[in-house]
Amino acid sequence: MTEVVNTRNALFEAKRSGKTGVVMTMGALHAGHAALLRTARAQADFVIATIFVNPLQFGPNEDLARYPRTFDADVAMCEAEGVDLVFAPPVEEMYPGGQPVVTVDPGPLGGQLEGEHRPGHFAGVLTVVLKLLNLTRADAAYFGEKDYQQLTLIRRMVRDLEVPVEIVGVPTVREPDGLALSSRNRYLSDAERDLSLSLSRALRRGGAQRTVDAVLATAAAELAGIDVDYLELRDPELGAPPAQGSARLLVAARIGTTRLIDNTPLELS
Ligand code: PAF
Image (tube, rainbow, N blue to C red):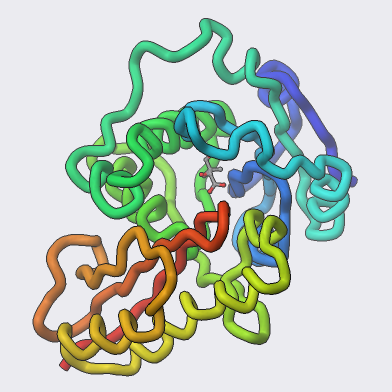
């Protein structure tokens, strides 16, 4: 039976034992979240899912107001995946004093890639993630590789600030045709959905190449005619790309009014 609580006091009072795992979400749960919940269920004794659409990580022109809210279906998924506790606080519970004055500075990487197109986004993400880690007192937290820069920055925050939690990355879940699952996919019309397949195709074909130039040229060719925000090859920690060895190819593009991101690991030789 999944218990649903909305306040920090109820969260603190919930009985638990053993290792606590947390999956943080903004709701609108899909099979990608189910994979996170399943991993947490397999590795932890007590699983908490948080559902909170964090206003701090949305820019003034972003989709906060229209962000999909599917609370009952979300709780049903948590129930089906064996979640012990759902923490779904209202905004006033998370930010009782209004906008926080002290926030987490994501450092230089916070201004690159997604951060260059979404100013303030990663300060908002890291601030709420640190608050939720402190509130849930989780031993382990599970994040999708789909938001690879987010995962990288959370790992970095935990390392740099000595946060006592294990961060576990979970591979991206895709539709059979390659489209990475995202709560924002539901905004796509049929024609836009077809067009959006060029992102995963670019990553697949680019990712099969073995030199920096070939990777970028092959991927860019697949994205012709698409409104690309960035296509970049980086090292696995999102520093400059190595000439050889493991790397990450990342893309963001606008399909109509919907902004999609995706990424893939690859090996350069
Ligand atoms: O990935 C998300 O859904 C959000 O950025 C997170 C980690 C729940 C923080 O609001």
